[in-house]
Structures are given as C-alpha cells and as structure tokens.
Image 1 (cartoon, rainbow, N blue to C red):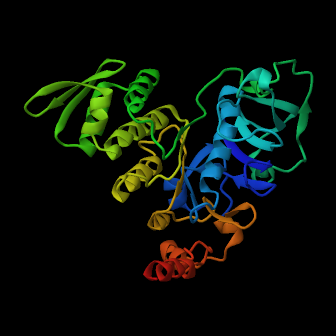
Image 2 (spheres, rainbow, N blue to C red; image 1 turned 180 degrees about the vertical axis):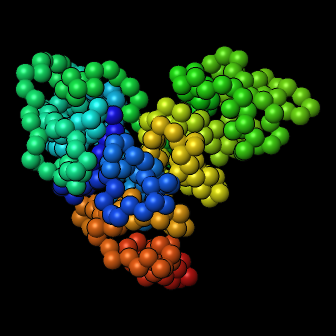
Image 3 (cartoon, rainbow, N blue to C red; image 1 turned 30 degrees about the vertical axis):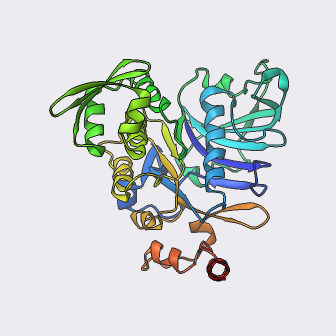
Amino acid sequence: MKLLRVIASGFKNLQDNTDINLVAQSKKTSEDKEYELVNIAEELYVYSTAAFIGKNASGKTTAIDLLDCCYSILGNFSIDNKHYAYDGVRLRIFFWQDGMIYRYDTELSADSTFGNKATFVNQSIYQKKYYKTKVNEIFDDEGFVQLTELGDLPEDTSKVFFILKKKSTAAMYFDSIGDGADTYQLLFKAMNTYKIPNDVLTNVISIFDETIKGFEKVDDHNYKVTFANEIKTLSDKELIYMLSSGTTKGLLLYIMVVASLQNGFDLLIDEVENHFHKTLVENIISLYKDKKVNRKNATLVFSTHYCELLDLFNRQDNLWVCSTDEKNCIENMYQSYDIRSGILKSKQFYNNTFRTAVNYEEMMNLKRKLMR
C-alpha cells in the first residue's frame, strides 16, 4: 500500500480542497530516479523525500497532521486520540494496492459514544486497474468503478478495511514536542515491535554521545548505561537529566528511521530541525535517498525552517510552501512558483520568493517599543 494523494476540506485551519499529491509530476531524470524518486509500479514514481516549508503558523504542522490522519485510516482503519476536531472534515484519499488505484471518499464526524475517535459517514470506495500508459490519468474519474456491498462495520471503522484487510504500520509520526522520560520506553517498544537489534541502538547512541558505549533496558523505568570506565543503572527520570534533550529525542528518531527503512513504511517528522544539528538532518535525508539503504520504498516527509535543506532537493514537485491569510494555504512549488533552477532554493527563500520572510517591520516596531 502507498498513499498517493489527499484532497481535504474542513481540516483544522486549511483552505478547502487542499491538495497534496505525492506522485511525481515534473520531468523524471535518471538522477531523480536514482535519488529522489521511488518506483512503486512501472512508470509510477512517488518521492523518497518530501518537505513542507514556511514561516511560523503557516500550516506546516497542519500539513503533517493531515497526512498522519490519512495514514491512520490506511493503517489502522480508524482515527483516535488526535488533538484536532473531526467534525466537518471531508477527505478524498488515493492509494495504491496490488496493481490497483483506489479512491476513498469519506466525511468525518465525532460521536461521544466512541470516545476520542472519529466516525466515518458517507463513505465510498472506487478502484481501477493501473496501466503504465495511463500514468498521467490515474486520478481522473474515467475508469474508476465504485465498490458496493462491502459489508457493515462500526461507525468508527473505515471501509478501507475491506480493501487492505489487515492493520499495519502505514507511517510513523515524530513530532517536535517530545515525551520526556517516557521516550526511553517508547524507544525500546519500537525496537521490540520492529525487531531492531540492540547493536543498532549502540551505534545510534554513539552518534549523539561518544562517551556512552552501551544502553540496555532493565525494566520499564530503569536502564543500564555503559560508559568507558563504568556501568550505571539509571531510572528514566535520572536519565532524562543526564542526557541532553537532543540526544534523548535523537535516539527515538533514529530508531524510527531504521524501522521505516527496514519495513518500508513512511516517516512523518514535524519540525525536523528541532534539537538536531543540520548535519544530522542531512544524514537522515541521505538515508532515504540511498536505494541500497531504502530498499523497500519508504518515504520521508517533514516540515522545516531549515531553508538550506531545500538545496538538497533537485526537484521542486516534492516541496510545498505553506502560507497563511485567513486560512492556511499549501502550494506545490512546481505548480505554483516560477523557480529559476540556476539559483539556490535557500537564496530564493531568503529573497522572499515564496512569501515566507519574517515580518521585518514588525520586528523593528518591537525594537522601538523596547527602546522606549
């Protein structure tokens, strides 16, 4: 299964009919096919990496939340314990499965009977066989046949269940907030779930802290840490004070990267630069671009303020620019902007080509007030 596209209305503060298309749209060079694209069917390419950029409060996190919402439906057939309202959300989700293109339409609602879960109303599913000769028409209405008489399910369960049958991890979401001392428990739970050996964790921790030679779980709240000259057993609360927040979050993030790459599911990261050196972020991006590492066609999707990261992208159609007026607007760089290929994207970012510059005049107003 691979998420291809989502069109959404009524989601948080996004403009209606917000469209995020994860299928390659512009010309595909041999270099792009080697690094920035993954091939899921003959002539059908999606991105190995994709990013959302913009200034604060422009909708970057909302874009990641929208994708997470879709992945929750495709992976768990449900949406629960989210921090946004469900009522009034309308989704059209396109996905790939076993040689078929599927279109799933639904409206979301909230019903206190089901707790903090979304309920699905007015659901319909359409399918059509994929042909490489019609790769540019996969989202067109022509050819789609509605699937009827699928059966009945509880209102909090999506009818996508009848297509995908079995729950699986479609994507993992890593946010910029952090989970404090609980991070270590989440870390080892992920390692156990995705069968990641402890020597991988040892290697990961050395990236962040060269003084630590080993890190093992004793129980849910205690951990054995091996240093060059001693071994200590520390509680999670002691550990959170000994390790930096960047190291703590970095351990979980890199283990999620490993799980994503080894199992082929996508990874969503909100504010990828938060607590991390730019070199580490560049390294994560490079792992998804390397087909010897990313052998199962995983996709990395992230939001960022690091405009220099844009220069790692040869393409433009896997970049979205977020802005805000009364509503958050998400525009594809390839479709909405006339970008000169000879100029660095980061330079164009600073030159306000994407209308993402910080409001300098308001900064000066604040300075003048402070001076008074």
